[in-house]
Amino acid sequence: MLLTDPVTLAFPPGTPPRPDVTLEPLGHRHAADLTAAREGLEYAWYTVIPESVPAEIDSRLRQRDAGRMNPWAVVADGRAVGMTTFCGIDQPHRRVEIGYTWLSPAVQRTGVNTAAKLLLLTHAFETCDVIAVEFRTHWHNRQSRAAIERLGARQDGVLRNHRIGPDGSLRDTVVYSILPHEWPGVRRHLQARLDRP
Image 1 (tube, rainbow, N blue to C red):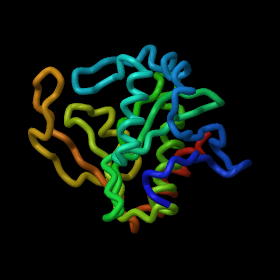
Image 2 (cartoon, rainbow, N blue to C red):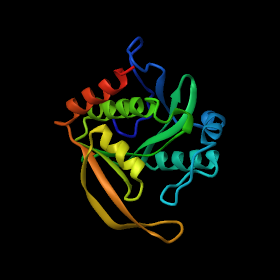
Image 3 (cartoon, helix red, strand yellow):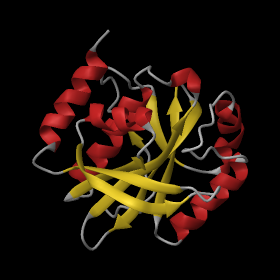
Image 4 (cartoon, helix red, strand yellow):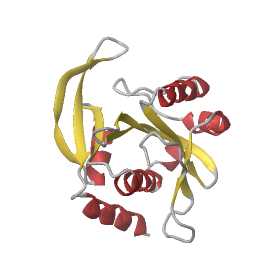
């Protein structure tokens, strides 16, 4: 299977602990839920929060059609509560980045993100046979850096002056990755986190 193939990612029926979290190929059918989920997201100068959910869906679908991104809606208990993607897709070299993720404040720190990452990583390593999954974030986004480190990803380095932000500020990007030989341990770690009451 290609990294760009649109597919629903879900835990097998009856599999604890979060069969209620699925990743559905992103579409405009998710717009109303995602617009509601966006409420309450706190802006920080180092993050980008979509101003218009329909416009963001259009943007991600254009990137999907160009083969640069595979976007999903994060669905919990039957409603879309955020977005995530495979991005930076390098199919010939079997590498991918997981990014452009945001979740409703109502589901942050509830296990939804952990479950979504477990689904994405399982798909990447076990279905798409990747040789590396990458994560990137702003140097100043300590919440994101901590979340990536909790997944078990290892820091590869920092790309200094990597991007110019909308306000003209320069972004240092922290790069993390997980490799195939690390995946079994990461999978056990994520499953154990989800198994906690």
